[in-house]
Image (cartoon, rainbow, N blue to C red):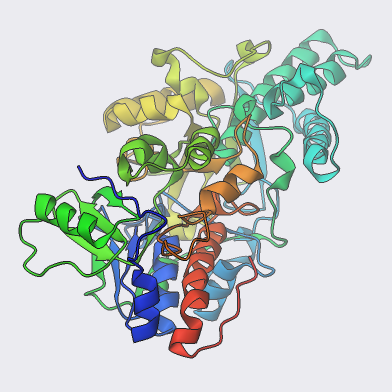
Length: 540
């Protein structure tokens, strides 16, 4: 396949000619998730008319997937609006009446999102015993105290000690263990119970971070992720309503579904473009215009463009970046993709005819007592279920019925995805019986679960700063191509958006939305004098 590269003495300058003729630039957006849709919406609102969205799947939303279940909606993907003050997702929801039926109890305020801020988490051991509430609170205070220490390394520029290996998990386990073992008032059995709870808390933290384990999360960078103040909000009608609001003014002709991309040819001369089209797209009747980018789809169609905005997940980029781009990506961008982390966090919904849990119970937390001295949270393939950290009670029951939502992450989540529904339902039922001590718990009458890791167009849930990576890698991933401001090479040929490209808000829906606005505004600013419009940069 022809490799495109515009030489420094080339006279091909599509952007310059486009500006002089004031022709509409051709823009291709890859992905119809939050980032892709807000990019497209913003460009269309500012007068760009030649925009095409290529979506590999058959639906909009990306990692937002709301499933109708009777009269209610279950979220396989994004569930909470994290914070309200200045959060663009919150304001979209509020302005469009999507939070009118969100009850006060659903506005959870803890660091870890729950379906209700009321009630009590039941910490149950694998021996069927409930850990006393005062002991849970005592340990929780200790854990949160150490969690605050993990934030200080980035926020206060505190040096990281070699013994932690720059790992949140290793640091947390070491400090908490020492504090537990040095407590003169606890019995040996209490100390063992607290050490077991530590492992459970780290599993929850891994699900929250979408990391295989907290051992893989960078200690020096952990504190850069920025929390927006305010409560976590659930959208009763489904998070997909946010997606639909963003898409409602995008003409159907713009959105093209089931269009996975095979390769993005960039920095192309007109001769390169003609060769690619001749070789790949035999249905192309007209000779290609001077476009520096050619997007080659899996079905053989080629779309010519002045700019392409890639909103694919970090998981897709990790899998495909070596073959997706021609010429290949600059080394530092490839390294940023490799260094940053993404893993799978899956949900397992279980519906029961009647609740077996008490009215005040908001979650059932699994504490394996034999995990107390575990050094690495990775289990043999057949023991994947030991990574399930908890089942949350969906609230309110008037909306959801009697429903639990389980959480699992990492390689164990991928193993769960390979099992059939019957197997997962049986295993989860046995776990609930074992941990509650109630052998009469029936099998659920329905199971529904996500499979983000094995979805070839997603390949993971959301990103995290892996040990060895930093915010600079996020910025490098977000930097458009080509890097060099050379008047001979058209600028902003390949742009990158998506949650993994936002340095402060990676892993969130608001990060995805803001990244899409950011990339749209790059193009708006580039063409503002051509279109005679003034633009303002978004505050991201």
